[in-house]
Image (cartoon, rainbow, N blue to C red):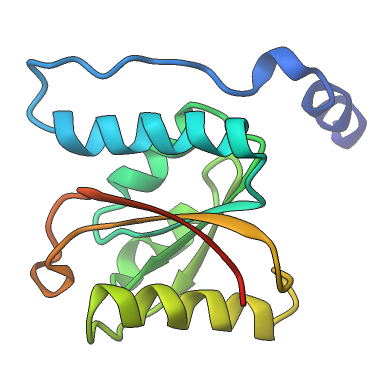
Amino acid sequence: MANIVKEVENFDEIYNKEELPGKDHKRFITDSICFNAVRLSRRVEAEAILTMSFTGYTAYKIASQRPKAKIFVFTSNRDILTQLNLVWGVRGFYYDKTVSTDHTIADIKYMLKHEGILDRGDLVINIASMPIEEHGNSNMLKLSYVE
């Protein structure tokens, strides 16, 4: 089974599905952010897409489009943490600090670099909700390097 999975994951057609968000969907903004994060990750060959998610919706939406970039999801919701790690391409982390969007993005990149998951100079895409303390729907996209 592992050999089959490895072989399938080498097939480029399974990656970068383009599922246009529907304008009449209640999560149109979040869906649009996720869609464009995946497209941008392919265009700039980003190493990873990093996001905060309380419900897991953003993680599922990004994973459904199968980016080649790694997907790292940070959540303060322990109930969904195990589920996130079962989603294709997603690696979930517990994270409960919400000082500000900028601080959270910098802290997450620092954590991943410190753990040896990302390297200095890696290009990453961050998805967040602003203001972050409201735990709202994803509405912000940022492209940056790991320092």
